Length: 270
Ligand code: FPP
Image (cartoon, rainbow, N blue to C red; front, top):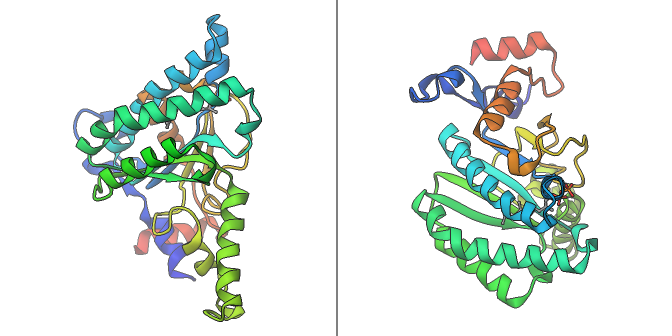
């Protein structure tokens, strides 16, 4: 049995030592890496008779709450889907507003993230963003580069297929240049060239907004993620909703292709 499987099975930390203020979470398994598809901003605003952009603004508040909750829970990596490779197809006005919002958020929130020991990491093809936004991304990442309380990955112009293709292209170039042999083109080598190398694979993927799909979000690194779907629209996703998703996660038996008894044996031996 591969050591990675037994490591995965026993890897998620437990809340046995959780501070008194979160009694409802005592004893739960805490996912090390949580990824969230933040859906429903537009509908949230429309239901209130407001323009869609107001939903994105309210979404920023929910982002702040999710980061605080993740840190409180002891999650190591939180990955948020802020803008997909396909979102460019939205009306020009909404795309422009989202770009402005990213810029403002990066500028405004970075000090708070830094103060809380959060490392910001933008994943995705940022080359399509304006020079101003790209510069802001670099500044924000550099500012928080040495923090280790929580890694906040923000997926911007990101697609799971793009991520895999990009990694495969880099390896193919190395093979062509004679720096590695085709036999060395392994799963591990590919994983090292994806976004988020060195971070845990995604344990829990949450999607808000009532739909049941992955929408080309993290594909490779979420191969064994537990999926939790909720009807809550993203601006309404609060600490209680996050805790609920974690308790659902904690109640699942993750088998990684093994049988239930094999998993129990690993747990008792480990
Ligand atoms: C999906 O809701 C949400 C987005 C495409 C944008 C998410 C952006 C934010 C929450 C703000 C910025 C965040 C960061 C981390 C900088 P939707 O518009 O597709 O909602 P709908 O399904 O109701 O139309």
